[in-house]
Length: 313
Image 1 (cartoon, rainbow, N blue to C red):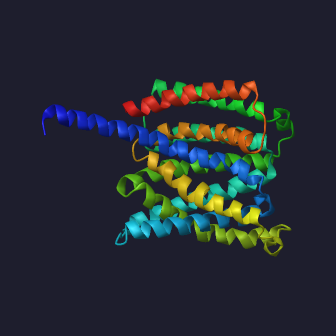
Image 2: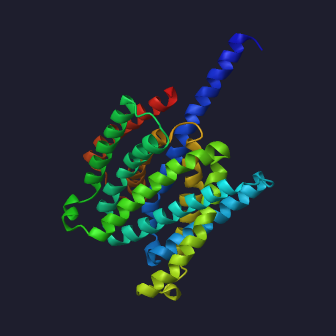
Image 3: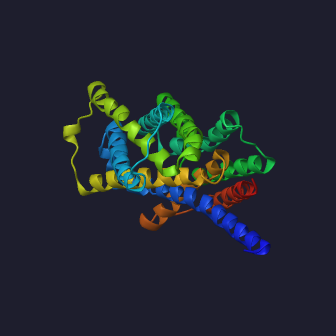
């Protein structure tokens, strides 16, 4: 192959990688955005810890089937097994605090606190992984944050924030921090193995940890697993959470980090409320105001700046 042909081939590969890193986390954000619509189908009838456990069980099962087919002879040393277990612990903590926090807060509070996740991811990426915080990345994240806040302010009554449930807010803050840690801490394992394996084994490790919280939830609350009615809406919601919101979305999120830093990939998290709003308007007939459009444009500019920063790194 001639030198010009090699150069063209290298450029084509770089372009494909750039598209993949952008499309994977955007697809994950789309699936997470769908959770708002799914909630309207009745999965609020399941107690928070039980729902988190069922979600991860379904997701881990689906992922394990795929990874066993693709990597049937894979072996891990003690260090990596401990790393997967630790990552699973962070994941379990994130799921537990997210579901409990959501149950104790309003939609507006939860949406605004979710905006902090990319910020925490950048801070941890710079601190733990030594990633560079470039001016373009900083400006992009700032714009995306402002745009998302504008979008949320158009969707919800922010006056609700005056009656904040302190426990729920703290739990959601912990959920944001732990998800950011899951994103950053997974990067070395993704680099050593693959996004699929890092997602699968951390998810599998989280299953018994969340299982231990289910009887605790039953013991200290009035929740009753026997009272759960396996209606079509509940079963459909659990399957969506497990197969799409967990197995597919978590894999796609990690897949993006095969190409760029965790700090860069975090910006695509901002697409989640945009997707949720669009799906709500399309499927549930909800109206979108001018703030949704304005905030969405500002957020898109911010994500564009970050994505271009990632392609140049």
